[in-house]
Length: 194
Image (cartoon, rainbow, N blue to C red):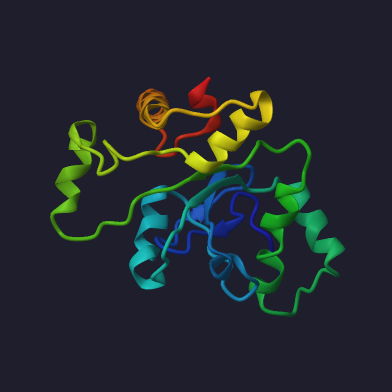
């Protein structure tokens, strides 16, 4: 198989080339990354294009980095350099080998909401004005929280503690959302709570 010096693989949606040692996206659903499919996407928009046909219940885009030309050639050599076979079998093995590289960047998983109707495109810009359906719900597992306090102190817990803790969680979530939005992400990460 002939390897082009500047093209690792093609985007599964727009067919634009994805260069070596560049960021790309994979679907978090295993059927999209298997040896038969091996979908890769050059942008989040291209990843979103495959969602309606894939009919995933809950999918995320995982940001990865394509291997360098040397890493790709080494993975082909390790796989037996099957040059006369279909190129998909050897090229789909390379994302896993590149993620095993200790020098590669950590994996970023980006979850994007699927549009549910034609009118949802305009509502994306109004996300800061959205109200949660959980605004007055208890967000903690009450029995676990009570057990934790009981184990530490042998004390009982008043019922109003549930709502206070839920309010604290809501405020922290709102802060984390703003941090993720300021960072240009659509995924709230653990670091957003620090």
